[in-house]
Structure formats: structure tokens, C-alpha cells
Amino acid sequence: MAGVSLLATRGPDGPDDVARAYFEALAERDAGKALAFLDPAAREPADTPMLTARILKDPGYTPPDEVQAEVLFSATDTSTVQVVYHIKATKRQLELTLTRDDDPAGWKIQNGLLSMALPRNDAGWDTFRVAGTAVPATQQRLEAVFPGTYVIAPMGNALREAPPITVPAGTVETDRLMVRLRPAVREAIEPQVRAYLDACAEGRELKPPRCPFRGISSEPVTGVQWTVIHYPTVKLQLTSSGTEAVVVGEAGEAEVIGRTASPITPDFAYRTTFPVLGFARVSDGKLVFVPTR
Image 1 (cartoon, rainbow, N blue to C red):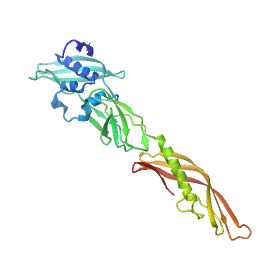
Image 2: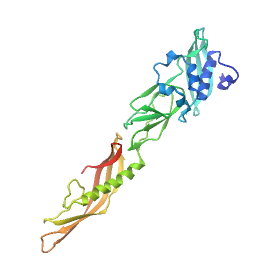
Image 3: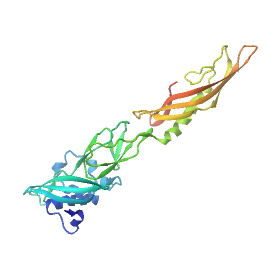
Image 4: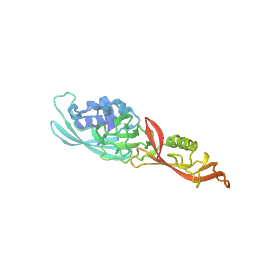
């Protein structure tokens, strides 16, 4: 078995030479050269954006390494070549079928492209970026890609993110994306929670509508004035769908003062602790806090 470097001194002649030349073109990140070794009829259907120089030249694509090729079977017009290669120190094997007709270029590879599963879209992503190229996240797989590995990253959501994963061509099922809340979400939501509480504190009622705190008195109170003594500590947790985040604020404290008609206790003051409940959502491309009460 000979390595891919043997082609440096001669062009491809036999089917094993063509197989090695194909992988050498991938190592050179030359999409046009690689496609020339494939039978055009065997590329249908194909994901055209995935078979371009842009893909092969992107840092998110890594070509196979340490390629070896050996003829397993050969007849006049057909041949089977076993290709062994490495991707990130992992050995992989591929049996290529090659055919030959009157084309002066000689042997053509029939199955040099592989399918590749895309991550499960559990969190409702808009787009996956595969080696720098946008792919709709509604797709479950790519039907035709060059051998190698591809960095896949989810895109298009202000609420959540996930570290990119590296997926080898030929993968039937990928690892799950580790979805997490973007750090910027807290920075955007905390001021909105405070603004919501400040608006509640401007109310002139013991029980401001749609607010988390309320005062208690056995007598009517006039001149009501609320003050937020302590803003709650806000925690955020993505929902299982990843489409929104639960917002929980704990240990908030507010005080209300006013006047009563009682000649004994005309000055009214009441302190209360309260939680905040709501959701962080994306609306018109912006992060918004939506209180539940």
C-alpha cells in the first residue's frame, strides 16, 4: 500500500492512483481538481454549496490525512479500491467503486462523496454554519460532502448559544449540541427587571396591578408611596425547548408608606418581601423581559 505522496512524480493511471489523487486534491483544498475525479452522474443529488473551494479552504474543514489506497478488485471497466485514512488520529476506511469508459481521463469514482448528519435541532436554531457555509437548521443531513471533518456551529439566536462541534463526513448521528444561555442575556434582562419593579413602585395603590409586591392594611390608606428597598437576585434558566428562559428573582424587598384615618396610628408603613417571575424572550430580534404577574 502506498501513501498519497507517491503521486508527486506521476499522474494517476490505475484506479488506486485515481483514488489517491482524489484525496490529494482534498489535501490541497482544490475542489475543482477533486470533482474532476468523480463521475458527474454520481454527484446527483448534491448539495452544491458543500462542494466548493470555499468549503475546502475554510478553517472549519479538515481533509483526511495519511491516505493509503489498495485495489481489492479490478476488471476491464470496474474496480474496487480500499482507502484507509486518518481524521484527527482516528482511522477510517472507505471502499471506492471506480468505472472506466471511453473518457480519456480514465477511471472515475462513483461514490467519492459521503452523507453527513446535522445536529438535532432541539432548540429551534435558525441556521447551522458548516465549515463557514450557512445551512438551514431544518435539514437533518447533508447528502453529499467531501471526505474530511466539518466544524458545525448553530447560528441566529440572541438567547442561546452552543459550542461548535466537529463532525466527520459519513456520520449517521452527531453529538448533541450543548445548548447554553448567552452571557449577554443576563446583562440585557437584569436592567429590564429593575425597570419593571421601578414602574411598579410608581403606583399609588397598596396592590399595584400586575406587580409582585402588595401592602396589607385593615384601614384605607392614602398618599401611598412605594420604595424598592432591595432588588431581587435574578436567575435565568433556559427552558427545555431553548426558545425562552425562565426568569426568577428571589429575596426582593419593598416598603410602602402612607396615611390612615386612625387617630392612633395615622402614619402607615409596611415592608414586604417578594419574588419576581417571568420569561426572557426574543421579540423583533431583541431580548425582552415578560413578567408573569
